[in-house]
Image 1 (cartoon, rainbow, N blue to C red):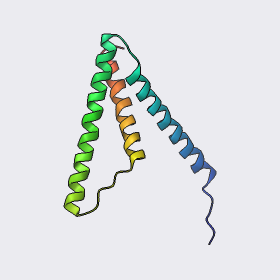
Image 2 (image 1 turned 90 degrees about the vertical axis):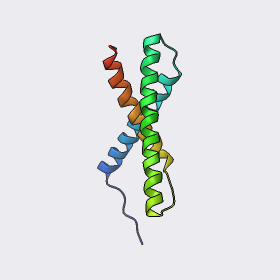
Image 3 (image 1 turned 30 degrees about the vertical axis):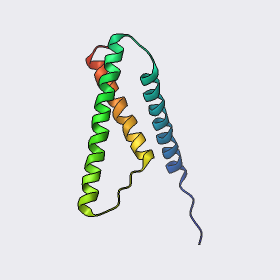
Image 4 (image 1 turned 60 degrees about the horizontal axis):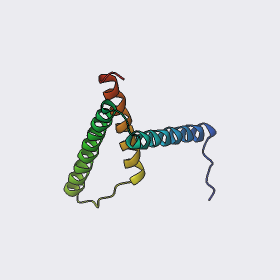
Length: 101
């Protein structure tokens, strides 16, 4: 039984998505670790709060859904990390724009 190779276009797309996610992870870590002025700290704090709220909310909904369906609870950590990075980056951009910077 032979496995077919993935088309080149699909491989390029997946590599691009992986690089974008890696960049978002780096942005998330750098903004959390970098000291800044008070306005910058407020922006990071609000983005972090919204990210935590979204991630905890999705995990609660996942637990409820799995409990109702009687399935075991499994969370893919890679997917959770990338969703967290996406939410954080979007919240950071929106809150920075709202606070003028």
